[in-house]
Image (tube, rainbow, N blue to C red):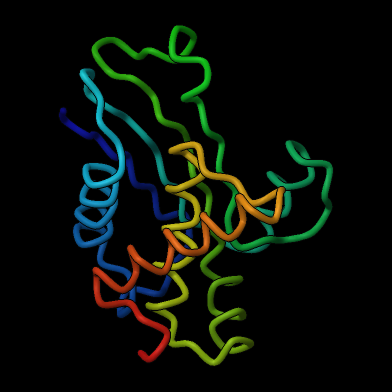
Length: 156
């Protein structure tokens, strides 16, 4: 299984925290560990600001406010989202401004908060959800396992 990740950084700054090659490697490793496919996979990640994610949140979720991450998962509709030889997992949009705010709010460093939000988005693409309490426990546990495995514990 090959994984293609299209990364777009639509915001200036954050270069000291965000290395796109490292982010891509992280995404591929998490997906390889958590998902098996006969087909090659494709997903996109847009790193943006609060203004742009607020527009996406309003237009697609009916919530007119910025958020940290939005995931558009396409796995439930495999036949509709094949892109040539690729199965499209979905799209993730992350506001780096919101990540920075949350890192401060939760007393984490930026890198830990970014990888938490990214992991959360990836798990949504892979079918995890947190609407029901039991599903939320499962997803939170999986997030912490992945973050710990990659050295992004709450302690950093």
